[in-house]
Image 1 (cartoon, rainbow, N blue to C red):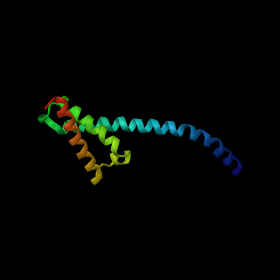
Image 2 (cartoon, rainbow, N blue to C red):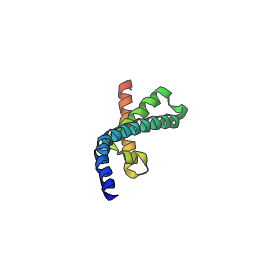
Image 3 (cartoon, rainbow, N blue to C red):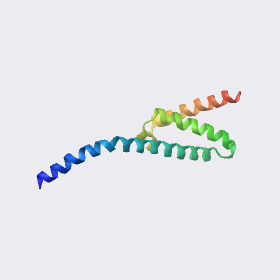
Image 4 (spheres, rainbow, N blue to C red):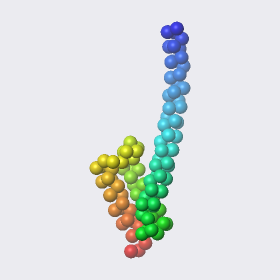
Length: 105
Protein backbone atom coordinates (compact mmCIF):
# COMPACT_ATOMS: atom_id res chain seq x y z
CA UNK A 1 0.00 0.00 0.00
CA UNK A 2 2.77 2.43 0.97
CA UNK A 3 4.74 1.52 -2.14
CA UNK A 4 1.72 2.19 -4.38
CA UNK A 5 1.17 5.61 -2.75
CA UNK A 6 4.83 6.49 -3.22
CA UNK A 7 4.63 5.50 -6.89
CA UNK A 8 1.58 7.72 -7.41
CA UNK A 9 3.30 10.66 -5.76
CA UNK A 10 6.42 10.17 -7.90
CA UNK A 11 4.31 9.99 -11.07
CA UNK A 12 2.22 13.02 -10.13
CA UNK A 13 5.19 15.27 -9.35
CA UNK A 14 6.30 15.88 -12.95
CA UNK A 15 2.70 16.42 -14.02
CA UNK A 16 2.10 18.95 -11.29
CA UNK A 17 5.35 20.76 -11.99
CA UNK A 18 4.66 20.85 -15.71
CA UNK A 19 1.21 22.34 -15.45
CA UNK A 20 1.87 24.49 -12.40
CA UNK A 21 3.60 27.37 -14.15
CA UNK A 22 1.08 27.36 -17.00
CA UNK A 23 -1.79 27.30 -14.53
CA UNK A 24 -0.27 30.11 -12.47
CA UNK A 25 0.41 32.21 -15.55
CA UNK A 26 -3.14 31.70 -16.80
CA UNK A 27 -4.56 32.44 -13.37
CA UNK A 28 -2.44 35.60 -13.02
CA UNK A 29 -3.44 36.87 -16.47
CA UNK A 30 -7.09 36.15 -15.74
CA UNK A 31 -6.87 37.94 -12.41
CA UNK A 32 -5.15 40.96 -13.97
CA UNK A 33 -7.74 41.33 -16.73
CA UNK A 34 -10.67 40.77 -14.40
CA UNK A 35 -9.35 43.17 -11.75
CA UNK A 36 -8.67 45.92 -14.28
CA UNK A 37 -12.07 45.54 -15.93
CA UNK A 38 -13.83 45.65 -12.56
CA UNK A 39 -11.75 48.60 -11.33
CA UNK A 40 -12.34 50.66 -14.48
CA UNK A 41 -16.09 49.95 -14.42
CA UNK A 42 -16.36 50.95 -10.78
CA UNK A 43 -14.12 53.98 -11.23
CA UNK A 44 -16.11 55.29 -14.23
CA UNK A 45 -19.35 54.77 -12.33
CA UNK A 46 -17.85 56.63 -9.36
CA UNK A 47 -16.94 59.59 -11.56
CA UNK A 48 -20.64 60.04 -12.25
CA UNK A 49 -22.04 62.68 -14.56
CA UNK A 50 -19.38 65.24 -13.60
CA UNK A 51 -16.88 63.70 -16.01
CA UNK A 52 -17.46 62.77 -19.64
CA UNK A 53 -17.57 58.96 -19.92
CA UNK A 54 -14.72 58.67 -22.43
CA UNK A 55 -12.44 60.87 -20.35
CA UNK A 56 -13.36 58.96 -17.19
CA UNK A 57 -12.61 55.64 -18.91
CA UNK A 58 -9.17 56.89 -20.03
CA UNK A 59 -8.37 58.19 -16.56
CA UNK A 60 -9.58 55.04 -14.81
CA UNK A 61 -7.69 52.78 -17.22
CA UNK A 62 -4.50 54.75 -16.58
CA UNK A 63 -4.97 54.58 -12.80
CA UNK A 64 -5.63 50.83 -12.94
CA UNK A 65 -2.50 50.23 -15.00
CA UNK A 66 -0.30 52.20 -12.63
CA UNK A 67 -1.78 50.48 -9.59
CA UNK A 68 -1.16 47.07 -11.16
CA UNK A 69 2.48 48.03 -11.75
CA UNK A 70 3.04 49.10 -8.15
CA UNK A 71 0.86 46.77 -6.07
CA UNK A 72 0.92 43.01 -5.67
CA UNK A 73 -2.10 40.93 -6.59
CA UNK A 74 -2.71 40.41 -2.88
CA UNK A 75 -2.78 44.18 -2.34
CA UNK A 76 -5.11 44.62 -5.31
CA UNK A 77 -7.41 41.95 -3.89
CA UNK A 78 -7.61 43.68 -0.53
CA UNK A 79 -6.89 47.36 -1.20
CA UNK A 80 -7.71 48.68 2.27
CA UNK A 81 -4.27 49.75 3.44
CA UNK A 82 -2.35 52.98 3.78
CA UNK A 83 0.11 51.80 1.11
CA UNK A 84 -2.65 50.95 -1.39
CA UNK A 85 -4.36 54.29 -0.77
CA UNK A 86 -1.06 56.13 -1.24
CA UNK A 87 -0.37 54.29 -4.51
CA UNK A 88 -3.93 55.02 -5.68
CA UNK A 89 -3.57 58.73 -4.94
CA UNK A 90 -0.18 58.90 -6.69
CA UNK A 91 -1.59 57.05 -9.71
CA UNK A 92 -4.60 59.37 -9.85
CA UNK A 93 -2.43 62.50 -9.67
CA UNK A 94 -0.04 61.17 -12.34
CA UNK A 95 -2.85 60.12 -14.67
CA UNK A 96 -4.73 63.42 -14.31
CA UNK A 97 -1.51 65.29 -15.11
CA UNK A 98 -0.87 63.01 -18.09
CA UNK A 99 -4.36 63.49 -19.51
CA UNK A 100 -4.27 67.27 -18.98
CA UNK A 101 -0.91 67.40 -20.80
CA UNK A 102 -2.28 65.28 -23.68
CA UNK A 103 -5.32 67.51 -23.92
CA UNK A 104 -3.18 70.61 -24.15
CA UNK A 105 -4.71 72.06 -20.97
